[in-house]
Each structure stands twice: as C-alpha cells, then as structure tokens.
Length: 344
Image (cartoon, rainbow, N blue to C red; front, side, top):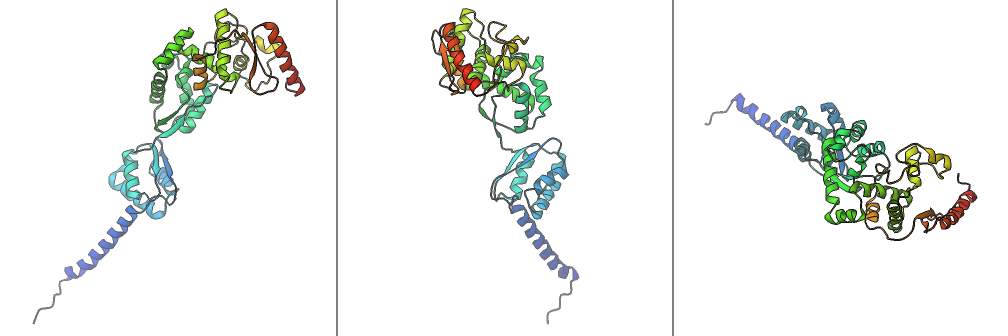
C-alpha cells in the first residue's frame, strides 16, 4: 500500500502557482490591452514640467483604469518617472499599453506639421508658433529681437522675418528655440536656389530686399496673378528714384492694420517704414511674404507703369498708369467709390 503524501509545502505550492498564473495572465492582459479607448488617434503632450502625477492624469484622460495602472507599473519597474522625456506622442487605436509605454519612455515622438504663418509682426509670429510647439511665446519673441542672435543668421532685428519661408514643415514639438531657428535658416537656404539668387541679382536686389518688396506686394493684393505687375511697377519706381509711396507701409509704421483709408495726416508719421517720406525700400519686410509674393518680385512684369490705384469695383485688383495725370483720374474714381460706401 502507497503512503499518503502529507507534505504541507506541496499542498500550498499548487494554489500559489495558480494565483501567480492568474496574476500573470491579468498583467499580460493589461499590458497588451489598448491604452486608448478611442477609435481615432490620440496625442499625449509631455513637457519639461511634467511629473508622475501630471503624466498619470494625461494618460487617464484617454485611458481606462486598467491601462493607467499597467502604465504606472511599467513606469515604476523601469524608473521612467526619474527620466521623463518630453514630446508629442501619437497613440494609435488598439495600440497595446506596453507598446505605447515603450514609445513614450524612448522618446519616439511624432513630429508636428508646422505651417509658418504669413503674419505682419514678430510678436504675432511668436504667438502663432508657440501655439504649435513647446515654446514659451515671450522667450521666442525675445530671441527674434535679440541683435546678436539675428546677426548669427546674417540678419538684424528689422530683417529677421526674412529667415522664415511660409511653408509647412515636419518639426518635433519639443524642439528648442535655437534649433528651431537653425532649422528655419536651413530651409531658407534651400529655398534660395541658384536660379532664385540669379534672378535677384538680375533685378539688382539682395535676398532681403526681394523679401521686403514681396511683403509690400502681398499687402497690396491677394491676387497672385496681379502680383508680378505690382512688383514691376515698384521696381520701376526704385530705378527712377521715386518714393514707393506704398500705403501698406504707412499702416505698418502706425501699427494700425485696421485702416481702410490713408489720409494726408497719416503720411507724416516719422518712421523708416514711411515710404512717402523716405525713398527706396523700407529697412525690412512689413510681413512674412508668401512664396507667390517673392516669386512675383523675381519674375516681375516689365512695363512702363509708375502708378497704381485700387479699382473702384473693389475686386482687389488695380488700375495702372504711366503718367501722374492718368493716376489722378483712377484715384478719383476709387475715392468716389469709397465715399459712396461710406468707408472712412
């Protein structure tokens, strides 16, 4: 007859193994379950000020309780909260919690599609960029008006807008300000191809001067088809030594972009941007011009026109004139149309 096994250790081992198996299964389920409960992509933004509590809150906003616990177990086991990496992290639908954690721990972020806006002022540029990237608006603005930093790019505080070409770029959300500006400088150099440089030279302008004139052309019209004609007219004025007399430069000098009409008293503003008082181009752009505006200057229409006035039909296009007498007739028609509409 076989002896009965009364080993207490063995009798306890089987239930313990069963518990371990259940726990392991539960943990495996938690780690392999989707972190996000959404059927669409979600994004988690982790900045330099985040800690364990704030990251847990951000994960909780898109996850269930089980996924959050699993994430924190992984974070605790790997010491993640002592080595947090900022960034913009994309969470795919049905992406396992373990995979998401590895992505965030390793700093494998998804870049932002950043479109540089065609804005008028540097403070506005800093505001718009800081909404898209992990940048402090005031710090970015401070960098843009720093003479030494501008000088490092061959520019100054009045021409720094030339650094920006209004295109869409893939940029990491947590890029430092210095690296961001270096990236913009790289893109600027790529934009100024040998062909564009050659055309600028043929026009008798530097790259910065082309951008400055393009900014005025863009302010004059949104009609890309007419921009080369306007650019050609202003180039004629530059060549003959006439003042540009560009109304948009007056608005820029006054920092009043709401003006619908420019009166004689506006023309007295003391500013290097007042192209009624000063001949030649202003000392820098009055906005970040469009690529269409820049290319309009480089490919300007050759003509004898020296004057232009907005059309009285408010189409956004212009009447051009060779003589001042013709221009006065066009201006009278436009002024009458303004008066009829009560525009002051």
